[in-house]
Image 1: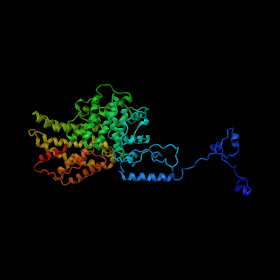
Image 2 (image 1 turned 180 degrees about the vertical axis):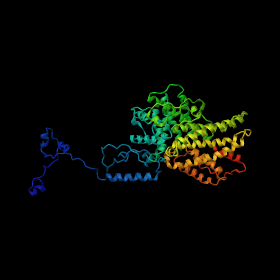
Image 3 (image 1 turned 90 degrees about the horizontal axis):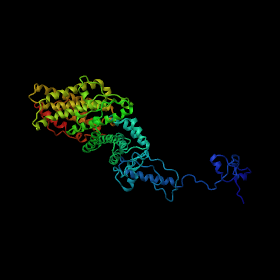
Image 4 (image 1 turned 60 degrees about the horizontal axis):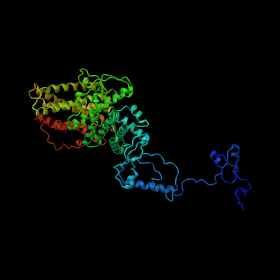
Length: 575
């Protein structure tokens, strides 16, 4: 006997015939009359098919509960580890959470794309108990299509993550390491097949970007190790590959100056310098042909900038540690870099040579990057000049032109500083980290020349007047560095030039020597000390020097023996 429905009991006909709707009506979202065939299919002229198997709806009972319990267990394990050591981790899929058990229904939905979780370590580390700050070993690097980018932990790096790191690099790092034109870089990156050398450069850029970002800061060490591995496996058989390798090693060296011991950074800088020498980038403009094509100009300008960045890296590291300079200034046939807007637009322009700029009686206005090169050169020359008397004495070949060379360097420095302050007012220095660093290096060079004044031969006419003159100039230069250090408050920590701690440290040592003679210098010492402490969190350069405690140093009597003060100061200028 057929069951009695509510509709039949009340005498009303049912709204629809019993049975499932046909497949065509389901797809078209139409009411099916449940006939064989139904009226809708007859009118449409299509075959009517009914699937008698009822579809499964929603997750099986207990599925969500199992998911929540497993997520809670993972969160508990993550909380027990270092929260700052998160790496790339693929999105949660059923295979990772081991959901294939009797209480959970299999899902045929595709897994979502991989993503980055800021504080989530790779699950392999949780399973096998690896320490969180050591990335798991990844397979040998593979270069090829744009889909072959592998992030830390061996997981694919999402395109949006790569784009974000690229943008961070050009927004922050490229302001003080302006090696690469964005348009040319993006054009090469979007090719279907990227070269191994370009892949190395990308990872070096991403390492620097992660180091100067709070969002990706936890990825910096893993990206750094991936960069070194790729550089070790990537061939450099032509000039284009060598140029990208040199650029990558420059970025690696700067990163290591900020995050690693000096010896490791110096070795990486040496690799970049040797590649620069191998490609003869110091002779980029030895030929007289001038560029007229935009692409040729940009390519050649990148070669110039790579050379000059390696040149500055050589000067800064050697002067800081008192090491012999590597690149010979007398063999440079490469023009100074063009202004940034010209480089970005690809508009060919002819720049002067370094030797021409240094011999100008009426200095011309240069870009911030070019100005930093000029003052870094004067810093290196003053360093050589200050060390030359000791070398001449060792070979019994004393030079009589020391005082003349001292005055010549002082004259060039004075003219360039006046021109820099005239062209770039304080408002410009407060917003440009390259200009701020350049201004500090200019005053640091003045301090080094003051230190070199102690070697002026006693037989030089007006010796006492010259020494007294430099003893007056040194405190003024230190005061100017203190004033410039106060401009650091206008910058994000991530946008400060990575070598800014060097002039701050040297100024700190000089002020410490003078503090017993002038009580007003205590405030200046506090300004420099606070600036170094604030930079210490993001920049490890000179960290050991910042931590030096001078409280136990016995200061000489400045009033009775100013020469002893100069000796004490000289010991720490190259400490």
